[in-house]
Structure formats: C-alpha cells, structure tokens
Length: 367
Image 1: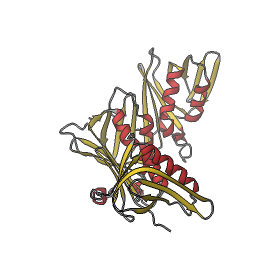
Image 2 (image 1 turned 90 degrees about the vertical axis):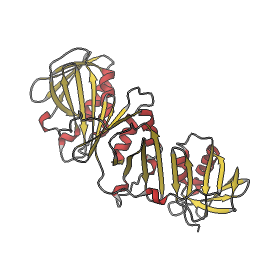
Image 3 (image 1 turned 45 degrees about the vertical axis):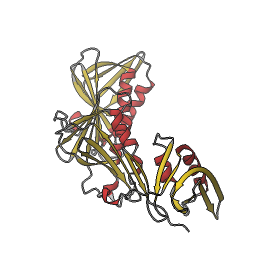
Image 4 (image 1 turned 180 degrees about the horizontal axis):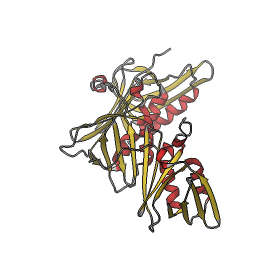
C-alpha cells in the first residue's frame, strides 16, 4: 500500500471519524482506524461496534492499493503536527506504516486489517433524502431532551419516524418532551420508525453541515441498523430495541392561558436565577401576572434572586416552578424573539407549540 495525500485533507478526514474510536475496549483493534486505498480513493473507517463512521476522500494520484489499521489517536496527533504539505503513507510488511511529510518521517505500528470489524455495505437503496441543514435543525431542537439515565434505556436516544411527507424527531427524558418535524419525505418512501442512540445523534449533529449541497440519505439496513450518508461521510448505527413511548398521548390540549414574552430576556432571567440553585433545591419560580412575569429563586444556603420582565399573560395569576435547565436548553435553540408559552395550571405541563416544533415541560413542586 502506498499513497500520497495533502495534510489538511487527511487531517479533516481523521477528525470526522475519530469520535467513533473506542480506546477503552478490550479489543485493541477498536482503538485503530482502518485505511483502505482503492484506486483513486482513500476510505477511513472507525467503529466501536455500536456506531461506525466511514469517510471517503479522493486521491490526487493513483498509488498502490491495500489496507492497514493504525492507532487512531496517535496517528491523528502525528498528522496534526505535520506541515501543510503532501503526506506519503507506505505499508510494506508487518502492518507497519511509514508516514513521510517534508523532512519528517514516522514509523507507526499497526494491526492486521483483517481483524477490523466489517461494517455493513452501504450500497443499499436509500429510504429517502433530506437536506443536511434541515436534518441538523431537527437534531439541535430535540437532542437536549434525550435522557442520560440508564434505567430507561429506550429514552437514551431520539425517535426518527416518518409521518406522511414529514420526518419527525422526538426525544424525552420523562420530564420534558421535544418534537421537531420538517417536510421533505417523498411520497411512497418506505416508512421509518427507529430509535437512534444518543451517541449517534451527537455524531450526526457534528458531521451535518449547514451549507452542504449534498442531501443526507437515510437508509435502513440489516440487523436493526440504520445508515446516514452525509456526502463524503457515512454513519452506520445500531438502533435501540424496544418501544419508544407513545408521546402523542401526553401532549396537552391547547390552553387559553398563554404567557407571551421576549425569549432572550426570559432566557437571561432564568439563567441568572439558576445561579442561586443547589443540588437539593433546583426549582426556579415563575410568577405570572397580566403585565409581567417574575422569575425568582430563594435559597436558604445561598440567598435569593428576583427579576421582573414585561410580558402579556392571558389567564388567572399563578405561581409555577420549573427546573431552569429545562427552559435554558429549549430557549437557546429557538430563533424567535417573542415566544408564546401555554401555562394551564401550576401542576400542569407548560407547552411551546410552533408549526414545526413542540416542547412540553413538567413543573416542579413548590417547597
């Protein structure tokens, strides 16, 4: 195997796949990246057996084909430190790679490529295509609501499903629910309903490009897996088995009690009030009046915070408490300057209801 490639190009591809590397596995091969030289293309692959990332990049000149696996972190560090000049990688025997660039020369010890896990083929027909910016927006608007607790494994991910000509992504941790949707599913597309693990969702959010011209292709493959093709990168993931909660049944009916206020001002007030929370006292209080919303926090250990914001509220005055992080997570991803929040009662969920986004958050008990 022998090839030559520009240093910035190689570094970019290593950065694209390095998050799928598993340095802590009992299988040493999972800490390596697989390099496969094929005619005028170099394919890099990394996997932890749950998520695999494959990245294809063209070679300026045809070299000698072959394959090798190299320690991913070490190899990426070496390439990062090289000058922005052509890098030559040559593998002759014993799976050792000679990496040369300018006056620098490294010998990197590898492992047999035959030991590297085989990712499923990516030539299967795609289910449908969706613009990368749209898909990234769906993930940004929902990923924060995924559960991090292992007791309910089915919630440690996001539901991807088709609904007519819409792709819907939903996530919940049992105390809040975020649902986002976007048009773009072609008529006749094969129905999709899959729970994608949180690690894969984060990987997709990182790889999806806001300015990408190539669409994302979502395709199911064998053995309860899903593949996302994102231009030069492909992500293969195992799906979480089980039944995702029927979240539609917990969405409250529209309420006439609506708080309308500035999203940036509310976010700032909640963030400042959260400075007075503790591990045992997290609730921040919202006092709703006809012309204002008062955001406050009293802490026996730290003191207090209070901030009054101009707002329009249609409903009976009430006091309701929330986990501030649940609001900050949602408020920072929404673009609206003015926000309408349905607040039916102190013991009922609050709801943000937009044409392509829904957010439901449960209140906390007042002390």
